[in-house]
Image: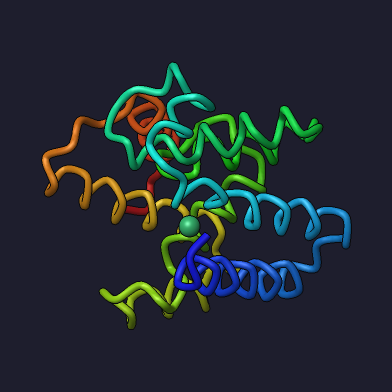
Length: 173
Ligand SMILES: [Fe+2]
């Protein structure tokens, strides 16, 4: 992992700790959130060959393989927590079935203060999250999907399902 990547992971960890404290979640749950944070980008700087070995069936652009590769490796090394593994595997694209681990990682990864764009918006979302988890999650999804659409990326099927599950029942926007 590069120094820059490590600094990113540390900022994401700091955010989830803040949220865990504000939400009053127990230590073991905060520990799960942190485990997913530390694992999620573990393969982000790995060579393409290694990513393909760990995630042979992940399709799409190479930069969407690092989540599945990190999850496969964590599983091979003995990680059994399904919520942690799913958080890591799908952290770039979203998953309807996520528990709080996946949801917190997905939000923190995007709104951490080191991202060089929309910093005021991201700070507002980070501050609001403990009072409005569902609302912030929907906004993060919307920002991420907007970015994917603007980039003319194909929308992964789990992303579409996640979108439909969060917005089908929403009456707030
Ligand atoms: Fe990340």
